[in-house]
Image (tube, rainbow, N blue to C red; front, top):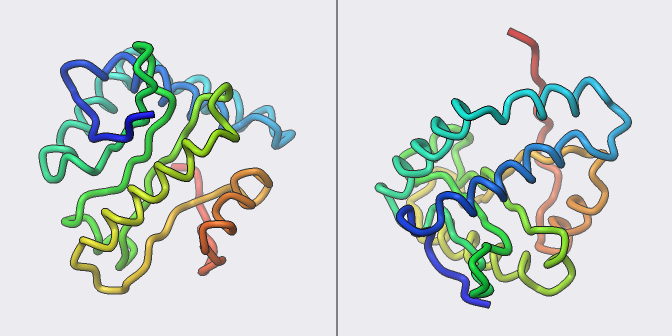
Length: 163
């Protein structure tokens, strides 16, 4: 498995497929059908364009912001997205925006390899606090166990409101 920086010329379609899987998975297993419907409703063609533009802006800052796992079969196995250093003031830390691995590659070590790449990038950033933070749904036990295994601890709690 090749863990490498995202290539916008060759990886965009596969990254979008993974991102779509990430978004659709956010509402699964929570028992909240409304949440699942909201996430499913946002993955439009317009959202795809906006997302890939956002990825391009972030990787222009640092190509390591989006790291992919490439098994060499034409479809990426997963990705991790760490916000660029210039956005570290959002949470006074490095921000792990997303990590996702296709279901058929889960349990193979791909997620661990991607997390190591994310931590390496975060350690190289000039941060107000030496932390890597992310937002995770407490009801996602699988993700919680993964993050705990990688040394993450609860640090506050995010709240949100509808606009």
